[in-house]
Length: 298
Ligand code: GDP
Image (cartoon, helix red, strand yellow):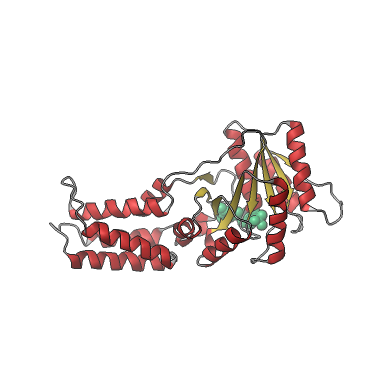
């Protein structure tokens, strides 16, 4: 991930090496290269604009640091601005004062919600919690079964509607799941919901109904980073449709460019909280803006 962006930025910084002072023309050329590299990485235009404007202003401004040469100074500025667009600090989960904490997952079909439920469950358990996964994706054939298998692999309990129980009502299952968590002393509930292949009014309404019924402490929007430029529009649709508190980026392992990762925070105003980078349960981590920025500038 970010391979091409990293290479392009490194090449740009190289042209500044050995310069005693940066002229306005040097800064302009550098900013132009950074802009092209970001656009080629599928970073959303408003993000590119803000980012390059900030770099230009700071690089031309009176940021004198005797310890750094001009090239190092530019790298430092780009690094700080990257951390900024990635969200600054890590945003951790907020737990309810009165358990169970309810975390609802929303996102398109195939985004990786069910897989993520297992990963998140395992992560929560490692943090000393007692999570319960609730299977409210009754749309996709086999989704309930998939969550049960994922839960088993992750060693995390799953609440699912009885098999053969007709079409099923996801709102009722969500309510029952939380009741079950309360009575069995699970302290965090992860509610998996149904998605569709594209943004769809019925899917959004179902997510809203589940949200209103369970009043989640956190709504996490699960976003497939590989969908490239569609990521931003999808994220906006979910923010306006159901709303969310944080983003989980999935399939970072398959995303060569990194545009979604660099755009979603700025465009939606919501932090990226977790990142998934593979199909295995352990391919998952809390999202650290600083580490991600240093990967880009490595
Ligand atoms: P859902 O429809 O949102 O519940 O999506 P699923 O959890 O069923 O995931 C869809 C597909 O993406 C499955 O084949 C998963 O194994 C795969 N998947 C999920 N997360 C990742 C990831 O981080 N990297 C890769 N490469 N594949 C993933």
